[in-house]
Image (cartoon, rainbow, N blue to C red; front, side, top):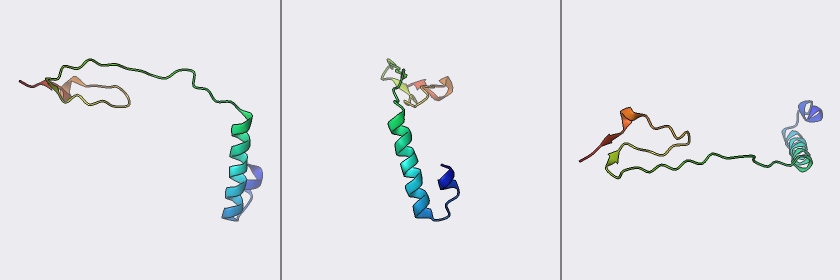
Amino acid sequence: MHKAANTLDIEDREALMQDAERKALDDYAVLPIYYYVSRNLVNPKLSGWKNNIEDTHRSRWVSFSE
């Protein structure tokens, strides 16, 4: 990382950064401890319900359609 920080040539810097990343990934194991799961039972008559990454569903955006 220090050598890459002091290198002006873009291609040499990229190669040094790739090497550093490879070494870091080889040295440390990464294992997700947990992940979020959500299940929503939604009435088909409910409009405005959109799945999203935060699983946030504001009541002002949903309504029942007839």
